[in-house]
Image (cartoon, rainbow, N blue to C red; front, side, top):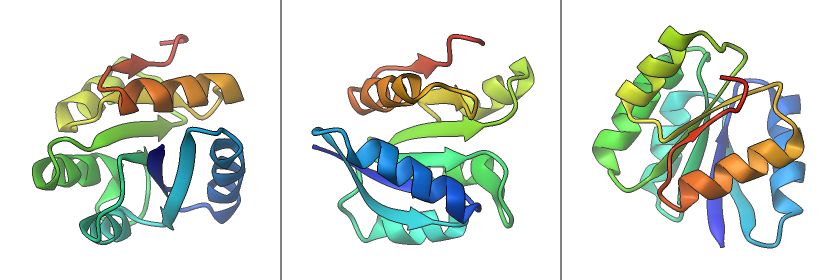
Length: 129
């Protein structure tokens, strides 16, 4: 079972991601966070295998959050979720410690595939990129 922390500042998106991921037998959303700071605090409590992290949020933001998460928990899967597909954003996300990058325009199956790939220790890049 892959235990996932969904981090996004939009409640509706978090709820939708939870519904999508929880319907899979091997995936479970164990928590939600609205900021990278909350994700760091929740992750320190343990029980998280993968953080799904929005790149743009109030506070420190997703890229700084990814960097801190990677420093504190080197084996943690970090999958960045973004509306932006510019090459520079993707490079910065991977440089910050993300293992995968998926666009918010992804089909349900693509997001599930990305989560499974990152949880298995693989890198994932959204096909449109």
